[in-house]
Image 1 (cartoon, rainbow, N blue to C red):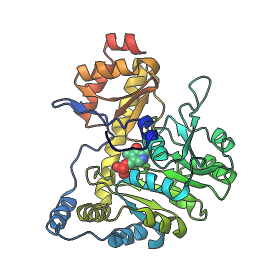
Image 2 (cartoon, rainbow, N blue to C red):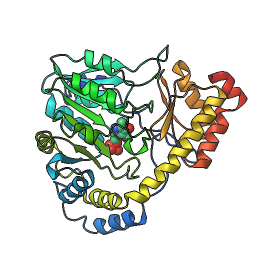
Image 3 (cartoon, helix red, strand yellow):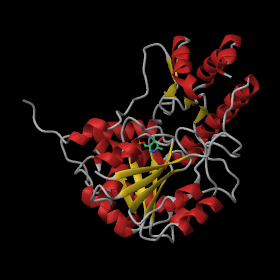
Image 4 (cartoon, rainbow, N blue to C red):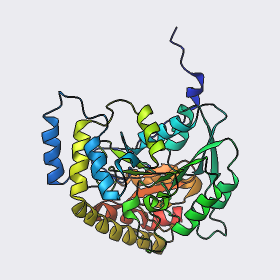
Length: 364
Ligand SMILES: *Cc1c(COP(=O)(O)O)cnc(C)c1O
């Protein structure tokens, strides 16, 4: 007889990792294609040589570097083993019974329903704006989300820009939403793709600025996407000291390792070089979107390093066809397909596939 395991875990949606397939172009996991900068690689090697020592559990040096970069206090910054760990820790610090509700849009980041259930809380999902007669479509319906807040709501995730649809809400809408949420409810602004946003300065939704005088707002950012360190697992939270202190309490000890901390510090120092790379990704994103629109696909405007094709029930079939053509993309059940922006030749391979007459005929 096997050991007793929490029966509710049986219903947890399995996290589907991006596919990989030797030889195929991988546009499935929103990674960057370029390796760490030489300065980061050097810091990684130096830190690896001290691997017999435990890392700094408080990530003090990295927190100080981030605090300076963001213009906040060290007491406002927590580090996590990827920002996905911080998502789970945020559920842990806010929810203590199955009656407690975690509210988020759907479809959004796949980790939200999982961390909610692992944390023994109840997920409340609010559909994104639909395609029908809605402009903009596939974006957070913040009015509906505000209306879905109950006295049991403990935590709200707002993924901005949204994974997997790429859409972003602007500053004014976000502030109106935050004004409507009771002060006792913690709102997470998950900005994993922050560096890829190119909204106008007036509508640019910088969560750190927006949250500066709102103690119930916490911002998540990560070194996994634009900073190119997905393999090392470092993300961070910026929020009120009370929230940060609670996060430190539930943090799995030493889960942000020494190599990760060193690489993050070096990458932050070299951020100008890294962020220049994002300009190239954005140019490719716009090229990809223009080509797909011209072929007849619907493609919501993206503020990220991926585009979304709302193909509905045909999504899995599109994913299979792309894989057969040597490009791995990410289909989401019967909602759509997410395609990461890769190197120009990789994007070209995808565009070539998607705009082929037979494919266009089947999927647009
Ligand atoms: C990729 C991603 C993250 C986190 O990634 P980590 O690698 O855990 O830092 C968080 N939120 C969203 C929406 C993402 O797409």
